[in-house]
Length: 152
Image (cartoon, rainbow, N blue to C red; front, side):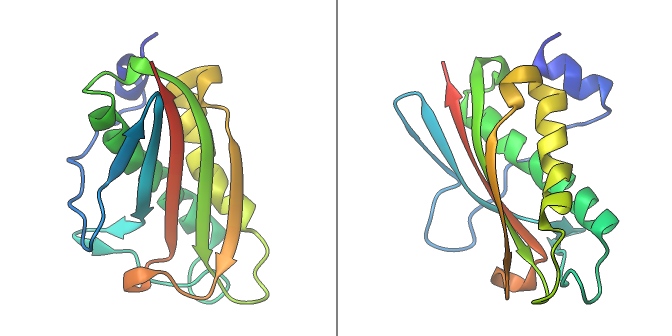
């Protein structure tokens, strides 16, 4: 099954790729490697604001991470010139979780994105990753994620 068929079977329609809000580009491709800039969690037209351990639950975080992964897949599709089947490997996922100093479930939130990447890309979606708690993210967002992938 192709990546596009998997997305369709999951009921996912990829959004338009966001326009950068500062001095950067959404992705850089060098050779076969693609580096995606940070994608933040969103609600409606703006950032999903909050802090885990204070006013957001792990379940809300998993859903937010899944939605960030959908946005990253849309950017990855643009980087792959419209063909997600050119992705040969999701290499690395970095997750920055806006959290209180005693919150320790960053990995559970990040699973929302990791699980979707495997659902969409199969074994090619299994990746290395890091999940960190941070004191603040731009625009007050609760979550920011980066991704590195290989494209044929």
